[in-house]
Amino acid sequence: MERIDRILSGLDKCMALVEVGPSHSPIVPKSAGWNTVVVDYTDAASLREHYKNESYERIEQVDIIWRSGQMHEAFHPRKLASYDAVISSHSLEHMPDAIGFLQSCEKLVKADGIVRLALPDKRCCFDFFSGLSTSGDMLCLLISPVDLKCLVLRVRRLDVTLMLGIQSGDDRTS
Image (cartoon, rainbow, N blue to C red; front, side):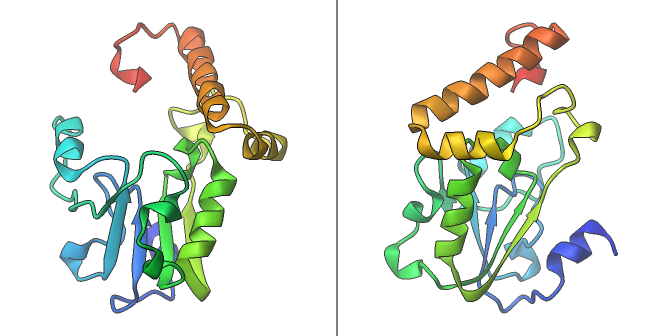
């Protein structure tokens, strides 16, 4: 079974879905008939500009822009516990608070809801030189202020940048 097939297993187009961070490669695109709320860090026009040198035809209209705080707080309170599934592919590793994200997913899905996460194999992507995140890291960040979470992520990125000798402004730092 292919990765997309595993993610979509048991889901159908009439279900109420949330896709987090689909960027230029949605898994459950509205354009294909899925009943999806798209959550991303910026609007569709900004995503198209960011991916202008790549294929961006599949970028969907972003319904909810989520940049800070808990994800569920970006939704109307009446929408809590109303979704059949939350899907996130290759975005959890970019979040400063993975546990907070999972708690938000729990608040968004129905009691029998599904949370599907696809995570990259760091051995085969740009995170190759990054250190591993541990459960201790997650717990530490859970009890630390948000500003500290961002600082920790920036320091980790700086460590990788220095290790690779990437110059400031180089495309590989974003």
